[in-house]
Amino acid sequence: MSTTTIRTGRCHCGAVRFAASLGDGLASIRRCTCSYCRMRGAVVAMAEIGGVTILQGAEALTRYRFHTGAAEHFFCSRCGIYTHHQRRSDTSLYAVNVACLDGVSPFDFPEVPVTDGVDHPNDTGRPARLAGTLRFIPADR
Image (cartoon, rainbow, N blue to C red; front, top):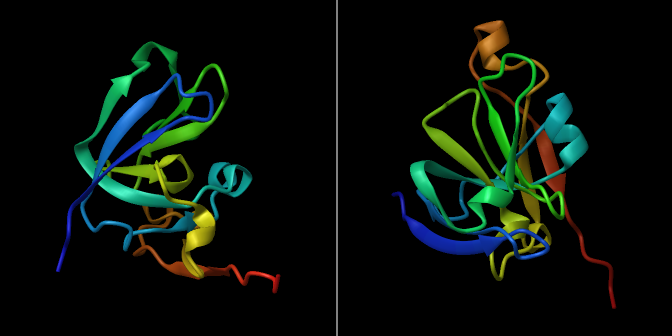
C-alpha cells in the first residue's frame, strides 16, 4: 500500500528549498550504478512529476544532462549539492536526494537497494534489475 509523505528539504547552503511529495514515503529509496550516480553517491527516494515544488531559489538551480539527455539532474549553483533529478527509466518520476530532506540522513537506512544503471533498461531492452544492496553498519561507540 502506498503512503504519500510530504517532506521539505534544502541544499547545503540553503539557497534552494523545496517540498517533495514521496509516493511511497521513504520505502522507495535506492542507489544506482550508472556512471553519474556512482560518482555522486546519493541515496534517493521517488516523487511523481509535480511532486517536487521549489519553494525558494529556483534561480539558483542548475541543470545537467548527459548521455541520452533524458534524465535532468538539478543541483544548487552556489554550493553544488544535487537535490533531485527527473529519471531516465521513468520520466514520470523524480528521484530526490534523501540527504537534502529535513531530518533524514542516508545513514538512517541499514540497507539500500542498488539498481543496475550500467546495463540500463532503456539501453538493453531488458527489465530493471537489482545490482546489489548497500549496507551501513554503525561502529560501536
